[in-house]
Image (cartoon, rainbow, N blue to C red; front, top):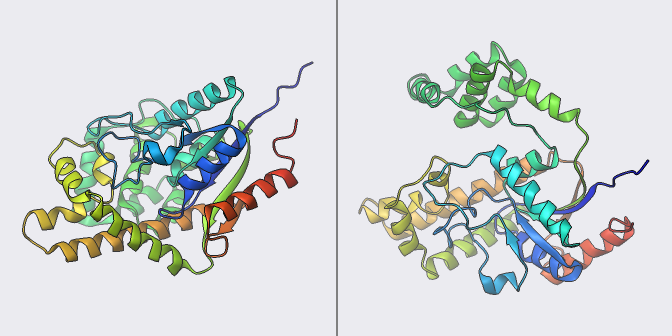
Amino acid sequence: MTIKLKTKLIVVVGPTASGKTSLSIELCKKLDGEVVSADSMQIYKSMEIATAKPTMEEMCGVKHHLIDFLDPAQKYSVGQYVLDAQKAIDEIISKNKIPVLCGGTGLYVDSLLNDIDFVENSSDLKLREELNSIANEKGVDYLLSVLAEFDPDSAKRLSEERNTKRVIRAIEFYKTTGTTITEQNKAGENKKPKYDTIIFGLTAKDRQYIYDRVNLRVDLMIKNGLLEEARNVLNSELSETSSKAIGYKQLKPYFEGEASLDECVERLKTETRHYAKRQLTWFRRNENINWINIDEYKTTKDQLEYALDLIQQQRFLDG
């Protein structure tokens, strides 16, 4: 009997502005790999600066999959991402190259690595609109109490995040499939992972170090033309997902003469820092991540050497 070995997959995660893209590209250059993006906003065309999409120059000839391929008006689900990412990884492996998954969208990463099956027809836009109206009228606490009636575990978990969109999604999922999100997650936990992974996470001993990088990145985005990009994006048709991209709606009050540019830029920095904090909180739950402190290993070269040493120590790519 022939034993089929799992596909080797290197993963680089972390908060925005931590240097994930640079490290993943250097890993690919060193190991003959290609990048598979796990960023829910870099998938969209015409959204370059705000999403920190790597330029052709920054890619250094390394092929990137799942970036810059979707119109901002088009819908895109986590389930579709998993299918597309699996296809990209298979394509890379077929060329005898190493796939490197890189991104900060935790739901994309976890769904792919845990090989979660997404139930078809689990969306009900009319129900979602009704739940949104209820949320606006009665608040997220009321929706959490509704969710607790049939999925107390999800209600308890989501009460900590207080993310109205996710609470609505959990209710919608149950109402349309008859299965709770908790039951769906447990079913996924019983499946054997499809990939053999080594995961690197970029963080910092002093979180302010990351926040300072966020502030610098926003300043650079403004310098590189974010205002013009934001005007164009805000004047175009957006999907429910693309409209959530940080970097555009924060500048809208400036365009409408309701706030100064400095005020809007400061708001953008604040919301981006909050997003970075949420990303770190998400990834901290994963005990399999090998963390690299970027305030200790300050250059991409240092981070690369650390990652390569660990890959060698664990004989990850042997066999």
